Length: 119
Image (cartoon, rainbow, N blue to C red; front, side):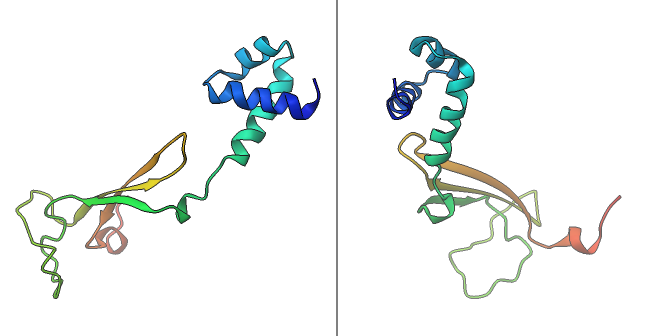
């Protein structure tokens, strides 16, 4: 089996969810041969997530309590126990295999930590 054929077989088996160990076993080659191929395939399949479209962005209710933001009626104040902190969740399209990537952020909207460091 030449390198190109081996790479295609590894790609096919990895696409079915097999681990490098099971791929090596099914192809009858050492695992040390399969692992670099799996890594190379994964690196080639990487997508620059920053260029992918945003599916959704959500911010907790009450994130703007106490902020004076004029001209944004779509940001209504709503009662909340937490003032000055915003919890943000952003989802982006990613790849065929992993359809979405989701990241969560905790934002100090008053920037109080930068003015009054603790510790």
